[in-house]
Image (cartoon, rainbow, N blue to C red; front, side, top):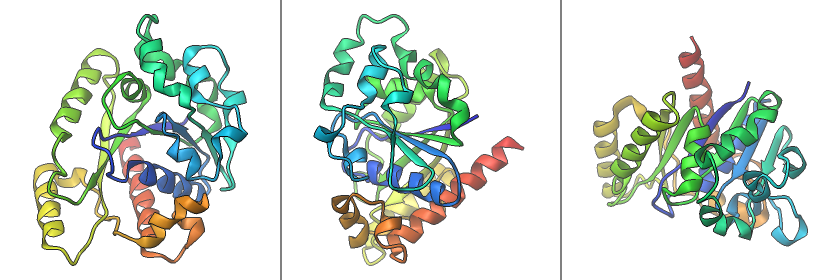
Length: 258
């Protein structure tokens, strides 16, 4: 049965989607069956994997609304072993559409049940807020990974996210756990980067992955070519860093299963 992991941070521009795409691709590269679910109406996860929104009708929106089944909305990517359940512009109205729904917090969890045995990992790219879509993602998840950009405001809002996680644990998903935090856009030449890293590691200890994601032009270029960094430039420092983070993810999950 699949492990479900959400990538969440209500602060935008922290590399959340890039991290979700590249860890998904890295896991697929080591022969794991992976589904990436795009819950952000901007649809950047799909774009970053080469999908042009107007060219396909598949979307997580209909799945959440109960008007479409999940299997027929999953797309095969160019990455072997990796599929995506893409977003659409309609997802922008999902928060309002779900207001009067019964068990609205469980829509995603119920929707993925038929495919849980089809994958080793289901990764969810959350929108940059703590609304109903993110609540659905965290309610459906076993774990959460929090990307943090190495900048002055890195920890801003993290406490709010942690409070949201605690509420979800109390109300809907008592087994939800933070798998780790990953430091992104790391520039070792900047003193601020080291200060932020020290602050985050002193605050969260071993919850922070050892591997950091460097600020790397090849990682930035990859989405415009519709490829994960690993398939755009395998030898780049960013691609290799994501591969190491994926290894840390697998090792952390194996420890929890013992």
